[in-house]
Image (tube, rainbow, N blue to C red; front, side, top):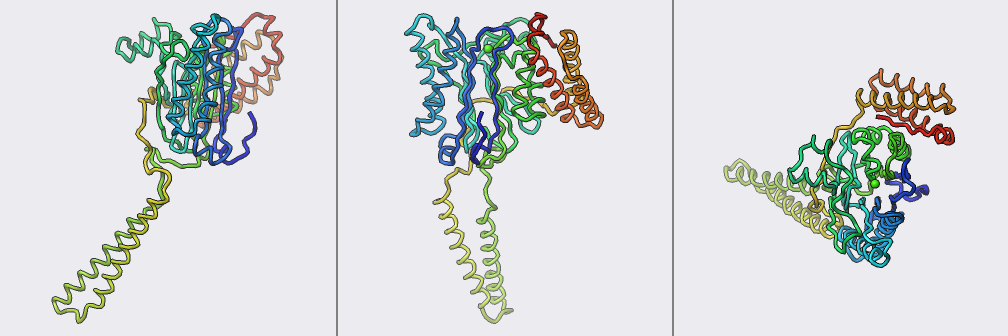
Length: 436
Ligand code: CA
């Protein structure tokens, strides 16, 4: 990831990690980021982030996800004739065709497929194109929302009313997906949004290697407490500490200063309404004129000078209002209201501001990890680790749960870094750390 250098790159902080996990030989996940560096491109194409999770024997899954994440940004950025949403849809269709045709051409790739979740941050809001069970979330002011629908057997059956929430946890495998790019010549793509963007919004894209191991509440708490780069690494570490049975991919985009500010309901913020003020002045002039006429009729006023002045004032105000209206119509390039949203997201919403319960959860992870690391015999600077725990406890006592979560996360990351630097002892012990 290179350092952002233009205001349009700096408007968003982003980080990404893709990890093979603890059990697989290959990483079949793939990711790509296309961040606009100049105003013209930002206005036309925004910033694009994509995650794909490939499926298929041997190298097929790897190839399918790579074809998706290479082809979508490329096709989307070249297709400047179309509006961004149409261009994104077209780019995903093209990726499906490319993967399908490659699968047909070579027997070792037959039937290969991939999930694909793409996020566009545009001046008019966030737009998503999505197929499969990778996910896109948004964190805003303590609310963590899943903006995408899982195209999995469990979610489809639940949506059809054939499963209740408790059934889904107990009886059905979660990794059967009902839609993907590549296996068929045609694919149905979910388009979601535009969702309004506010400064401080954090978007998370991930493969099921993360969402299968780390709960939505934990993801929300980590995003609330840590900056993107630290959060991305910790999320991956946590999935690995819990066994890392699958490949894990995380992309985080935090909007700091959107070039177009938007309100919560998706409309673009307007400057104070001049026309309303003009109408008030106009009505005041008309009222004065009417009162003068009335007074003159009642012979309480000798002449109509004041009424004439008020009348002229009213006419001038009316002309100014009309001119301002036409000037505004001619120069306005951003619509006052966002386009009608597509899709039905968000599909799930969680309150995730760190609480005492969050702190207890991360404190428990930290303590269990400590125990496991001690058993393995990894060398660790324990006084340093104890400092993190001490800071976390102090913050919790003051009721500063976000800070406390942050310090516990720092401690966890510190132990994971120690484990990684002493990987040989970990491998020799043939143990992985399964945290609950
Ligand atoms: Ca996966």
